[in-house]
Image 1 (cartoon, rainbow, N blue to C red):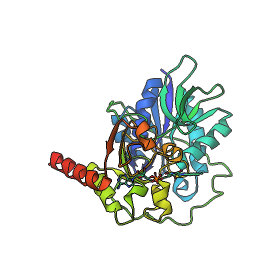
Image 2 (image 1 turned 135 degrees about the horizontal axis):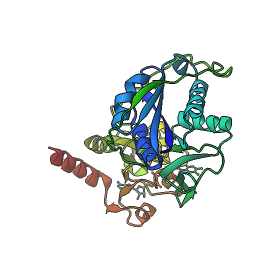
Image 3 (image 1 turned 180 degrees about the vertical axis):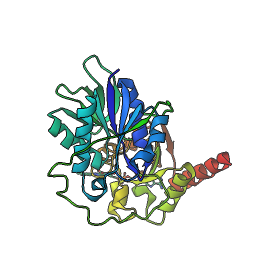
Image 4 (image 1 turned 45 degrees about the horizontal axis):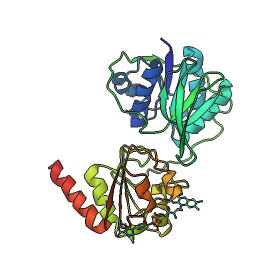
Length: 320
Ligand code: FAD
């Protein structure tokens, strides 16, 4: 069976959820071989094996943490040469997409970015993308070289599939460009205790209807009752009620959670562009004619200040 390389996104050995989702997709195409780099690389092996990695190629050289993406591209190129995989899968983060693009260029391969699904095809893996503000989905395959595919978070379930996960050292010779851009400092973001917006399984968003920064406490309370991330429309961000890092949409972040709850958001095309691939969409809006209701699975016509606190209390009660 063909092997499929999966680039591991991890923090000091703790594997991030999008990588585990990639393992689910990789198993549809072949046998997943994970590539874990940098500090704590070998510590990822147990989690990766639990989710289907037959092998884990590791290199904990300090260069991965000291320089921007090129050392990681060098390592993936070495892994491709060692394994001759059927495909290389990379999480669709900003860094992941840069790594994937550079790797595809090196390999002379085609690349597909931001896939939301992946299946085996007769002539190689077939990726589904959501395009034109999520108005269409396309299916495509890489027709040249080793397919390099980035996949958006929440595109697949995390599945337990115990495999050997044998750790092997990856031998990497860094290119002349590897040390070209040095990281000079890192400032950890203040933690809200909530999941990262693009990776969250549930996103609760607020728009102009929230009507003030202080009122976002209502949105946050619902998010916290569900263990969700908080999103915001551009109108709410432009008004200064919530940080731009939380903006969902064309000029914000693109999210694809299992559940998206839009509160006081009209559903403009630019907002939909960032959330329309969510699996289940719920909206609370006091205007029954709001365009958001055209795309929801469940809609509540009502004042969010009546509906959302009741919903939060009900969820808390049911959770005990
Ligand atoms: P509105 O459209 O004003 O809607 C507010 C809604 O709240 C209304 O439907 C109203 O009925 C409802 N409401 C009011 N009070 C309550 C209440 N008490 N209870 C329940 N409902 C209530 N927008 C984005 O979101 N993300 C983007 O990335 C983005 N990028 C853009 C890029 C470009 C180039 C352009 C031109 C626009 C972009 N926009 C983006 C802006 C977008 O066009 C809309 O203006 C914006 O999404 C509207 O935000 P909103 O739905 O919160 O506000």
